[in-house]
Image (cartoon, rainbow, N blue to C red; front, side):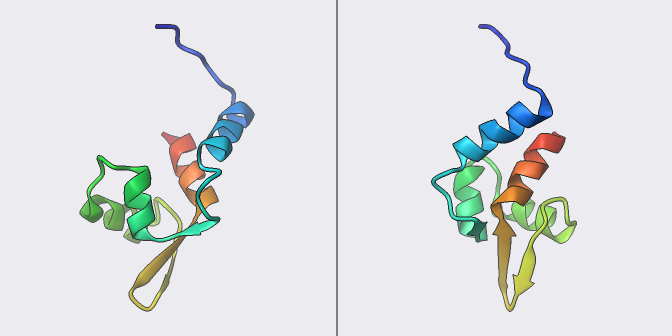
Length: 75
């Protein structure tokens, strides 16, 4: 298996294509579909610690798709 190394711009473009079918703003249930092996408790922890930027309105978290891309690019 060959490993391909992407620069930051290529990596960002890759994630944009990967998530193109998702809306620009998503909720926790959709984020759970994006990260199927990550539990809801872990997702809420990332949101509360602002590791993934979100805006809380009432009981719901609204997460910009770009903040998920930024989170993945930090890893």
